[in-house]
Amino acid sequence: MVVSALFLLGTILLILQTTVLHALPEWFGRPNLLFLLVVFIATNLDVYKGAMLALLFGLLMDIFSGIFLGLHPIVYLLLFFVLQGVSRTLAINEAVHQMPLVALSYLATASSIYLFATILAPESTFYWAWGNEILQVLILAIICIPFFSFCKWIIALLNDTGKRNPFRRQKSGNRYLS
Image (cartoon, rainbow, N blue to C red; front, side, top):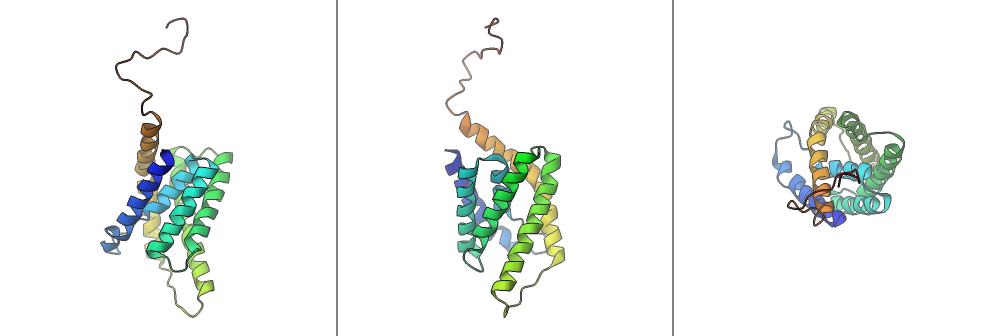
């Protein structure tokens, strides 16, 4: 249930980012919301479900706006496994740690896509605009906290469906006071 809800959320975010947010002026910024969802999945889901979602989101990203088919799935899977390794060894669940994590991972992902694109098509000219990339990093770092809170709320809502009855008296943790 959680995987299908996150897939639906990712599809909605991808459609939003490639239609509505793409129409915004470039100086206003165009946040990559699907990237934020991939980072959230990498830090909060298990390996199998998360890798499957990261691969599907990479394929969808290539279908919607990819330069080379297969580039986004490889980069998103690599990002997923790196963040899985980092999240297992470090405590990055607090908001203070998530902002630099999102910023550094976005810079690494964007630069690897740029690097692979220039290697795969040397006759084409790809421009790296530092101003736009820094603006993207700042926007993603700012909106990552409410976005991650929203995604955690969705997961908690889906996990608690049918288990909680507001009219039933909750038992206390102490078995002698129940």
